[in-house]
Picture 1 (tube, helix red, strand yellow):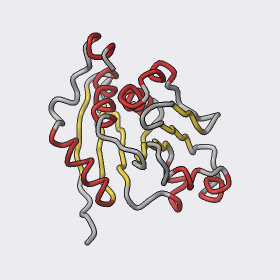
Picture 2: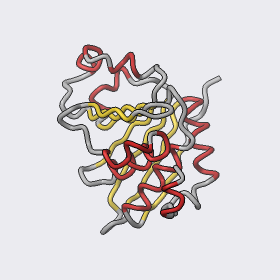
Picture 3: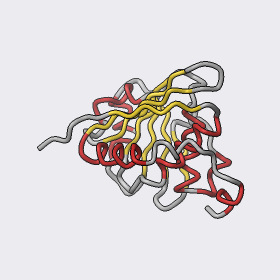
Picture 4: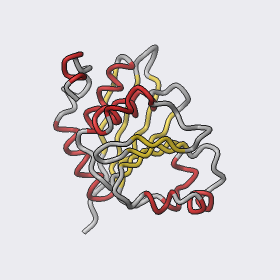
Length: 176
């Protein structure tokens, strides 16, 4: 029985809150999870990824940058985080040639920017995240589930949605 697609919208008021939402999601992610990230340049994707990496691969948090030219940034952690930027890919054939398709089913967490470029190789079960400007430093972040694991992640995130925008204190950050 297929799991219904569901959605959740979270509005953040600062880059720190956007990062905190990523941190909250990162705490829920498991090996094999795929999260796609879509939105305009400067839309908050890198802040969000920094939060996810802070949860799963804290040593790499300060190194987070958009992998536009490298295509992939890897952050060692438990599980490792693979952050792809598919902007420069011509399509799913490039993803297959680079081995991206194989890594989407592995023991890592995959974060994928410009997922529409490799749509044919994306797993059916994933979490889609859309970033939109909501004025000044505010962002509207929409989460859409695809498949049962995506739906479970979305339900878990919805349960903590009110608290997930709170930036971590220095004490909480150092404990990670």
